[in-house]
Image: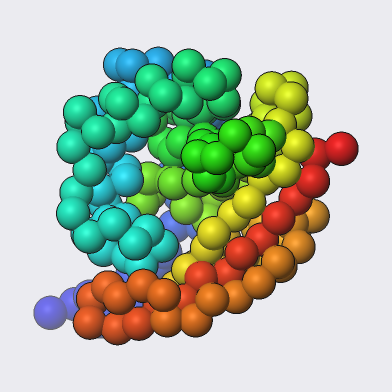
Length: 192
């Protein structure tokens, strides 16, 4: 063997190395949901049903149930929005729904925000909540209630606080899922 074969290999200078592709920005458009979005919305929601305590549902939502809920929200003039990637993929959604069925509650709604698993931690929840609050205000609604699991949803509580929601109460051990008791934090924002 030649002596130079024992020498460490020379390295290519950094400026001559092929640079990695820059990370593409996280891009999306927020728009009103349409019926064609419902199968994708259902897939996002059912991920949370099966894997988290952020919803107290234990059975996957059927498309029929979701269609009915969507139609009801639309009939009442309540916002139901989605975030869509440039290639048309639904990344997340948000909506409000009547807080209670009694007529005197007609200006008070409960909000819901769900993101696809690959869309969390990128500011999408913040963008959806901002749009949802504005659309709720435009719809003439006065109060938004958030009912948030007291364990496993700390990011949601922090997000709502950023938007001026205040804690209205805490109910301990009102739900039982995945063999454990879960409470809820009630938060409220006035849309004056």
